[in-house]
Length: 526
Image (cartoon, rainbow, N blue to C red; front, side, top):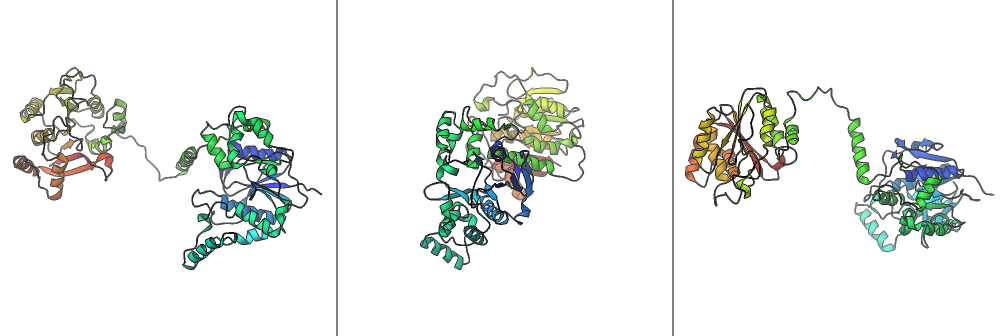
C-alpha cells in the first residue's frame, strides 16, 4: 500500500530566494504537507509551510560547515538522518528539489540514483528502523571518523594522522563524505539500494546539465529528459543561484525554469536571487543597523567637514585622492572661526612641473574656494607661478611668484605684509622649491602657527636637482635626533638655525598607511 508522506526541509537562517520558494511551493501544490526546520530567522517562506525550530530534532551548540566552501551541507546531512529516525512517513527534500508529482513509497524508502555510481540524498526517505539509517547515524557521531569505504591506502594515511594526534576533521575531507558517499555505501551494504529510483526518477537533469534549466533555447530538451517516471528535478541550489545572479537574477525568457515559476505563481521580485557579494553587503548592512552604541551627541559642530567641502569643490586634498583634509580638519578646526591669515602655495594642478607653460590658462582654484568657506573670517593668500589674478573675493589676495629663486618668495612674503597662521606648500613639489619656501616662510610664520608641505613622495623630473636631499628625508632626520641632515651643508645650517623655533613635527605616509611612502609633513612653530 502506498503511503502519504510529509516533506521535511531545512534552512538554517536567512531569506529564501525564489528558487527555494518555488521548490517548497511545488510540494504544497502536489498535496504534500511541508515542514521547514530552521535555527534562526527565515524570510520569504510560502504560506502553508509549517515552520519548526530545528532544536526539536537536533540540539546543537555549533554548525558543522565544509572547510573550503563554508557550506552547511555536512550539518544538513546529519540533520536529515535524525529527522528521518524520529519521524515515520516523512521524506526529506533539499530546498533545491522541485516536485514534479506526489512522492509515493510502499516501504518508506525513497531515494534515487544520480549517476551509474552513486545515490544522492538530496531527496531521501528511509523508515525509522532502516539498517542503513542506523549506520548513517552511528557514522556521523564521530567527526574525526575514518570512512570505511575509503581505499586502504587512504584509510591507513588517515589512521596514521590520527595516531600522531592530528586527526582529519570531516569538514576537511572530500565533499559529500557524510552525504552521497555515505548514503551510497550504506544502502549498498544493507541491500536497501534495491529501492533506489532510476536516474530519471529524481535527477533527470544532471549536475553538468543544470544550466539547461535556465536556458531559453533548452526548454524542449529539458522536457524530453523528464519522463512519466520522474518525481523530482534537482536544481543544485548554490551553483544555480550563482548562475542566475550573473544573468541579472532571472532565468532566460522561455526557459523551463521560467515556465514553472509562472506555473506556481512565484513572485521573484519578493525573493530575489542575490550574488555572494550582494548577500555579504546585505548582511553587513543588517549588522550595522542592529548595532547599538552609547548615547551619541549630534555631529557637525562648527560647520561642514573639511573633507566634504574638498569633495564638493573638486579638490584632490579630499577623499577622492590624497585625504589630506582628514588630518587638516583635526588640526585646523580650532582656527576655523578666528581671524587668521592663511597662505597656500600652488593653486591648481597642471603647472610647469607637469610640462605646461607658466602662462597656461587657469579657470579654477578649488582649494582656495574650499578655504574661503572653511575659514569664514580668514584672509586667504594664494601664491603660484601661473596667473590667478582673475579670481576675485574680498578675502582673497593673489601673489604671482616663481619659487625657483628664494628672493621671489621673500618678495611675496614682504608683499603680504602680515604673518600667516597656517601655510601649505602644494606648489611644484621639487625638493629645492619646498626647502626654499620653508626657509623664507617659516621664519615669518605666526607663533603657534602650522606649516604643511604636501606630496613629499613625488618630485617633478623637470625641476628636481640631482643628489639633493629629499624633503621627507630632511624632516625624518630632524625627528631622529632634532638635527637636520642635508647634502648641502649650507642648507643644513640654515634649517638647524630654525630648529630652535620648531616645537614639533609629524610626517604621515600616503593615505596614512604605514607601509607606504612619506607624503605630508606638518611643522608646529613655538
